[in-house]
Structure formats: C-alpha cells, structure tokens
Length: 282
Image 1 (tube, rainbow, N blue to C red):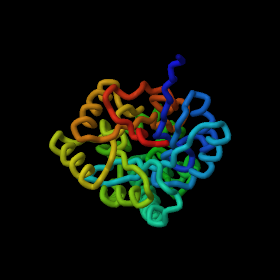
Image 2 (image 1 turned 90 degrees about the vertical axis):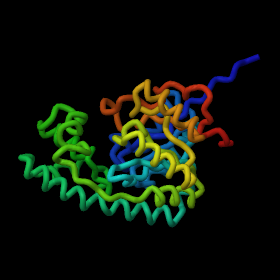
Image 3 (image 1 turned 120 degrees about the vertical axis):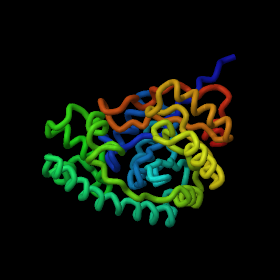
Image 4 (image 1 turned 180 degrees about the vertical axis):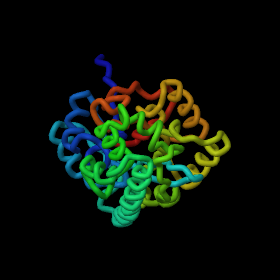
C-alpha cells in the first residue's frame, strides 16, 4: 500500500504588487520549483496581483488560494491579519483595502522628510523606483534604497537602526481596526489569520487581550510555522493555537531571494495535534 506524500503549503508571501522583489508569476514559478503544492499570494493591503498569480499557479498544476495581508493598528502597534480563500471581487473588501493604501503615500512623504532631517536626503524619491506599486510604498522600499545608497549594509540593519517601530525614522500609521479587517475577510467569504504573532512586542496581558478579541470577532487562525518565527516559537504558538482553539497556518513570508529568512516551501510541517487552516478545503 503506497503511503500518501504530505502536501506542502505556503500561505504567506509577497510580490512586486506590494513589497516583494519578484512579479506574481515569478513567485508562482519559484513556489512550484520548490515543491509547494498549495500556495497563496498575500500582498500587503492589495489584491491586484491575485489574477496573475492564480493563472500562473494553475498553468503549472499548483493549487492557488486567494490571499491578502491587511495592516491593522491594535494597542498602538501594527498587527497583520492574513485573509485566505476569499472572493477577490467583493466590493467591501476592495473599498477597505483602497482606503488603507491611501494612507501609505502620506506616510511615505513624512518618512522622507524625517530621513532628510537625519542626514539622508532624497529618500522618498529614492525609494519610489523600488516600489512596483507606488500606492504601496513601504518601509521595505525605503530600506532597499538606504542600502543601495550606502547608508546601511543590509535591509535588516535599516530596520534595526532606522525604520523599526522604535527607531527615529519610523512614522507611526493608523491602519484599519482589527474588527474592520476581520469583517472584510469574512464578508468576502474568507478565513482570518493573525500573521507571525511572534513579531509583535506585546506583554503577556496584551497578547491575551489580542487573542481574546480576535477570537470574539470570529477570527479563525494564527500562523504557527512562519519564516518570521524562530523554531522555539513554533512550539510556543502551537500551544497558543491549542489554548484558544485557533486553526494553524504556515507560510514563508518570502519577499525575495537573498532578503528573506526562508525560501518558499522551505519550512517544516506544522507541529502535531493542530488543526490546519486548510482542514476543510476540498
């Protein structure tokens, strides 16, 4: 009797439609080449690349799942909520994401002014060519410019010293509320997942409040195995999923070759005893 080979899922990554380095078609090809069977493109606050990504995935025989990563402000910090398996034609989601994107351009200009005051002039103009979608210019695009201009040796150093949440070049942003993000995803028939919870700088009490509110809003899952977590955090957030009854998701959070901790399809499987976010997908 032949043993079934487990499918490889990667349900979190980015393309040039937001802050990735590769076009949606190229991300699909890389995922397939790396053995991924079920793949979602989750660009930040943007679903404009889904049609291209879906066509490319189907062309190679890989199952495609619609995805998006929505920026949320919760307790004065940015949290990301991944939406999966939703209808990309939903009007309310499209309108909500458009409102969210509009704030990015305003913040980017303020960030350029702040960096100029720190002795790095022209950063806004310099970051624009790195943004495939000017509506979605982000800290990552500024970081790539600052590396290219010689201010820092790599993108991670930019975030550690200049653009991270607690750094002098960061401009705080009021994103969507948690309730809005979950409502948009559910209104479009999708499933809501807290992305890489190990990245957020909350106290244990705040984390408990975040998970409680998310569950009360009907949020279904959290990412357990992700390129943004250390291996010890896989176990930590597996315990969180069990405690709250969340479904477990996984994804590389791939942005581009040489810039991401993990490549597409390179993560280990979910820890045992968890119900995956895909448990009822046909």
